[in-house]
Length: 126
Image (spheres, rainbow, N blue to C red):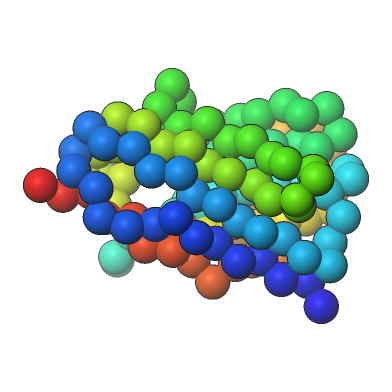
């Protein structure tokens, strides 16, 4: 059974940093598309970043470009989201997601992904 388990969320001051991790089990990252999404209260889930395993290309939603970095570690089947210069508007529950090969990106639509983690809360506040 495929499992995605996020960790690393928490409370951080504006301008601070957090790194989210997503450990993926029973799912090969070969040819996978891995994404990070977030959902703020009262808003729809939105794509933040994704990485296409076949060529390692990364994609970012415009509001996080230059501040967030997605990466993966094939040895541990883990995908990361490094978040710098955090803003209050980044506050949300963050989810990782996985799918098989989807072709060239970006892939920011929730229905494209087959497997989801349970989410981890990120709160940016002073």
